[in-house]
Amino acid sequence: MTSQCPIRFYLEKEEKKKESWRYAIAKQISYHLGSALDENEIWDEVCLIQKDMEDSAKSFFTESVHICRNNPAWRTCREADLMVQSARFHIHGVIDKLFDGEPSFSITRPTLAPSKGIYTADRIRITGYCICLEEMFDMPVESGAIEYIPSGTERVCTVQPIDKRRFLRALYEARRIQQGEVPRKPLNPPCRYCPQNDRCDLEGGTRLSDLI
Image (cartoon, rainbow, N blue to C red; front, top):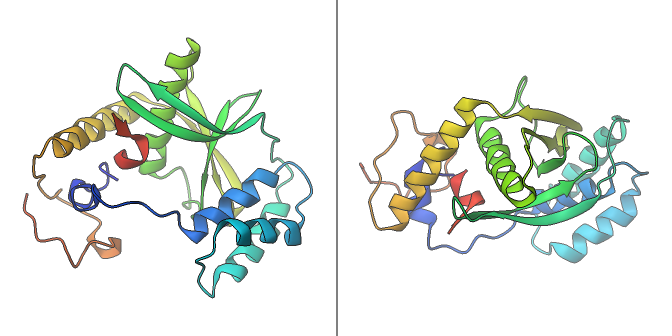
C-alpha cells in the first residue's frame, strides 16, 4: 500500500483490515489447484469462511473456476499459509503456497493479470517474501510466482535491483508514518480507484501487506 500511496497507508494505519470476499474465493480455488476442481466443494468452503459476499460473488467464483480448469500447468503445493519473517528488516507476512520446485513459492491474487508482465505492487510483495525466505533458510531466493486466479494464470517474478530499491523505499516510508510523520502526496497518486479518496485532504515491525 505504501508503495502505491503513503497517504492511504497513513489514513488506514489504525483500521482493522477485513478479508475481501474476492480474496477468500481466490484463496480457496488456489488451495485446490493441481488437482480436479470440484466446484460444489470449493463453494461450500468459501461460504463457510466468508459470510459477507456481494451478489456478484457466485458468478466471479464460477468464472474463475472455469478459467483455472483451462490451465494444466498448476502445481500442487508442499505447504500453504507459511508465516515468514526477517529480523534484519523487521518485517513479517504469510506466503500463500510453498513448492518443492522453482519458483519455490507463490502468492494468490484475486485480480486479473495485467496484459503483460507483473504489477509493480506484486513485484514488491515477491521481493519482501524473497528477503524473508533467504534469511530464514540461509539460501538464495530470487523469484516467486503470482497466481492471478480470475485470469487462470501464474506469472513468475524474478527479483531485480529496482524491485529491491522500491521495496526499501516503501519500507522506510511506512516506518516514518508509523513514527508519526505526515506523508506528502506522490506526484501521480492512484486517486481514481482509492477507497480513501473522499477522506484525503493531506498535502503532504511492519506487516508486508502494509508496504503494498
